[in-house]
Amino acid sequence: MPARNHNQWSEAPSLKTGEWVDSRIYSEQEIFEEENEKIFKHVWVPVCHESELPKPYDFRTASIGREPIIICRGPDNEVRAFLNVCPHRGMLIERRPSGSFLEGQPSGNPKRITCMFHAWQFDMKGNCVYVAREKEGYQDRLCKENVGLRRLRCEVKFGGFVWVNLDDNPAQSLEEWCGKPFECLRKTLDAEPLEVFHYHKAIVDTNYKLWHDTNSEFYHDFMHYHNRVTGFNDAYFARKNEAFDNGHVVVGTFEVNYENYEGFESRAELSFPYLPPNQWYMIDLFPGFNFNLRGSALRCDIVTPLGPDKVMIEFRGLGLKKDTPEERMTRINHHNSIWGPFGRNLHEDLIGVAGQGATMRPGTEPRNILHGRHENETIHDEIGMRHYYDVWGRWMNRTPSEPDKPYTATAVAAE
Image 1 (cartoon, rainbow, N blue to C red):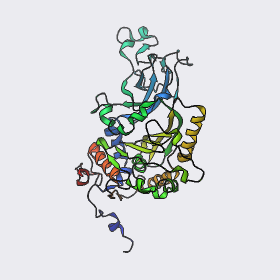
Image 2: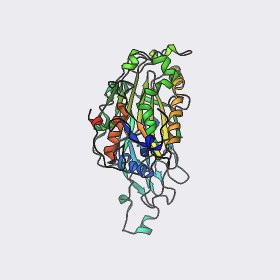
Image 3: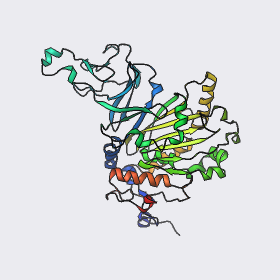
């Protein structure tokens, strides 16, 4: 059959509804804005790990749905989250990505979160404890007790990750939201305190959903020489893609043969607790967070969408807090030998998502992106994407294959 003309190229594929999506969901600014409002401002987001706040008064800053947030550990050892916004004039309070409030800053006192604009100060519970010239300016019309920071729902769970939700009344608790997908690793992640040994962030020119796709589908493993050499066997192809409520997917484990790759060695000696040697688990959480455990190192990706074709990804590598220096160095070497010193997934994955980003920039013509492979829900079955986009459609009230139309359930989603 000859190459297709424009009409042939654009027509709906001969697949069931739900087995493809319209590329406009990756390229349209309006859809991107809706995602921030309808999804990211209402779901639980793993913003960091508790080991990055080891001492009282330590903090980190981040953002969710364009809202700046600050996470800090109080003198009572509790981790809390607030909007990083002063209630006085809406000033961004803390600009540093991380640090400590224990020592005083040029514009603030020790043990205080201080807005440099007018020197208003807050404690680690978000209470306003000082308003400059309070009585002179406000008399009895306003007092510091009424102008605390905006607190956010915050929990530490699933191996010490810090989860934040911008919604005061989320539809589901954190446990209800993603507890079941974590069951496969809960005992392992909670057995010993974990610690971040690698942190890196990067801005990638692609849509955040395309990055999530490359962690959720394994049909593209043919382009990974490392995975072909160490993993293509009967056990690999039998791995299950298990779909959970809320758009989450778990990829089942199998034993990776690292020693088959020249210069590599088995990772059995430093396997995470309660796991057989050299196992590989992956948990993909809607709308774009990934927990990837390869025997001796856990990697976590957290996405912050910046635009239809731009996403900031924070990559963390974690080991056991009790590691000896020698064990830690081995974990770091294992982490870097798979994901590189910058932690950005396998190198070919970046080529893939950047190539998709280049063809689906804002203004490009709509095209069909296929998710129609069925292989009994095993590793090359694209069930993960079909499940994800059906849930995406419900949150957005858009049909993924026809985003101008309201959401309708598909036969594929009901399977």
